[in-house]
Image 1: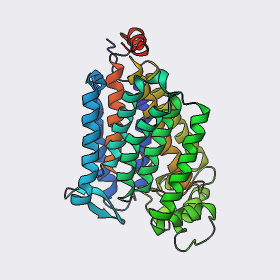
Image 2: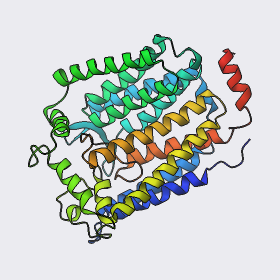
Image 3: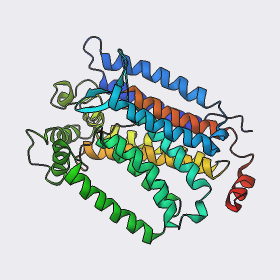
Image 4: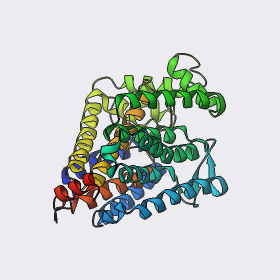
Length: 370
């Protein structure tokens, strides 16, 4: 058994990102509710991380456990339509008085576990289209339950997690083309029958970014201005005029990267990118040490999860992708996504405890179907 339970390079790459988020959301004017609440969520999330790192997660390989987690996820998302709290036009939150909780965040981690379990025994059979369709059905049910809240950003992440894990499982090019064609058909259907007007506006603003800058395109336009105004060295901590003077909306959550870029400049952005690069590299490194296909696929799925959030959030902050409300890992304000992110890392550290001991034998047995 591996006594070194924690990957310290991974852990210490996350701490500066957490610090950057706290500093960016702090207004330096009196008591800041975002700063104080985020600090509490960080402490709670770190406790979850270290507790999870001591758990032996081999029990997750059992089919009944995964079925239970899938049913639990669906039930949780369905309860939102009865008990959920409406915020910004979406019924995506459970409100517990002093704090709120968004189930879609931990459900993303559960989906990674479900897909890792499904593909771990079918890795050599992925060429069969039925495995793509069955795995897609699991993801599609969760995707729809999240989309109709409506939470377009989380639904996109669900799709990217599924697509990424299908691709790393060895999908053929022919089937990959089929997946994209199916995706195009689904998008056409969603555009005509599911998307709300504001969601269509965000996509249209992506195609024509300089139109409607006073209405639906305002957020994206202000975000690109904010990023560019940081120039090389930035305006300095606490001197970001776009965010501090409220030209940039939601700078604590969706657009925290833009607020950070304004204050820290191009140099600060490069440092931030390097930290995320180290984080993803260490996640992938731990994945390759997995004791079985299940642990390997979970680690790779977790890397896909972080990369999806990072690329979509930074892309929309820079005007390269539509505004979808996707958080930036470990930086954006909010406890739900922090708990999910540290839960995912904690599970990875728990798997790290038994990584090397059974690696070769278990993988051989899985490929042989034993």
